[in-house]
Image (tube, rainbow over all chains, first blue to last red; front, side, top):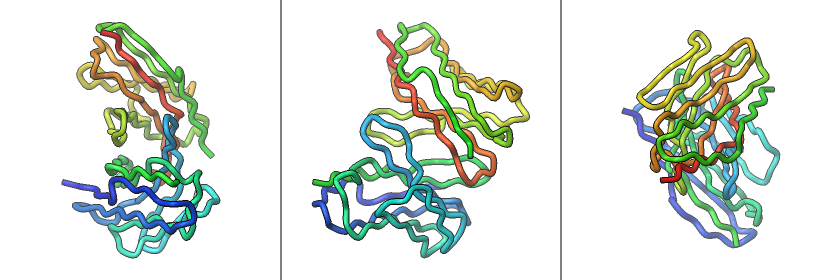
Length: 110
Length: 111
């Protein structure tokens, strides 16, 4: 069966520091991969999605970037975090239409 | 692009009563409509979905209906229980690549 991993689970970072969040999927090939951000008490904001290695679509202009170096690996990065980057970051995958979420990373920027 | 609207934003029901959450979409090309349940601090979990070739789908106490003509779909929860309390999100997708989410409904089931 398919499994999606995200790490770290929680992260506290100072403003201006870099960020790297990793997501990996097991048990499936060539999935679509997604990064969402969820502010406290809010909805899901799509940040990036990828239909294949090296193919990244950005939905929202921001100081974040994404990369997909391998078929089942998706990385979210930032060179300099802002206070507004705090939130719950969710990686998701989809195959044949159904989308499933990873456990998430709770990021607090101080 | 697609625009999904979800109502109500908050909903309180007595235990045992039914709850209904409604979503509308704008893109007639959308053909897949999932519903997610998100408990506090956890990931959204897919609870039921419906494709455009079906008008209704049921799974125990939850059901989803779809009206393609009117471009709306609804989640129905019967015999609600306290553990049904959560935030529910609807979504729409046409390509299977992008999913457009509603803004969520916070459901509280009062014992």
